[in-house]
Length: 142
Image (cartoon, rainbow, N blue to C red; front, side):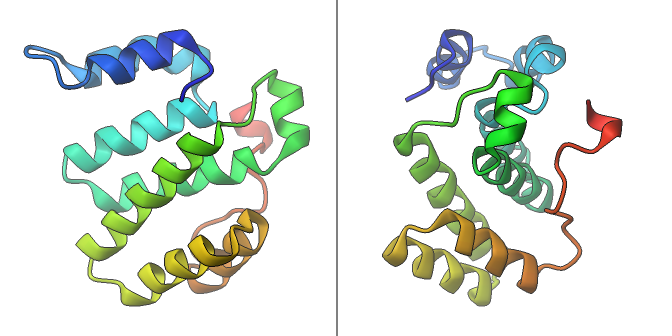
């Protein structure tokens, strides 16, 4: 599912006893801060920590970066596998249900029917204008 073995190993370790996801994610932050696979793990962690709005932001940013080929090339990242993109969408649906936002949950269900990430991101930008999806590559993040 993951293309980066370190992140796959981290994902595989999440359910182990005495595993501290926060510490493990911190170890990889500098190297993978805007990598879409890392952002998925961060969104997953934030969901576990009961911080759904931050988790949503991390997952949407991850999807946005997956859809930005120029940024991926510039940072030497790869687009996530289709399986991981599906996991991101499923996790977003869980979070939208958790925060009781049926409009966003319906948007996910619409995406699942047409499978067009670009339209999904455009729609989510309209519904959630507070999330700046225009430029995940701003100079402050380079």
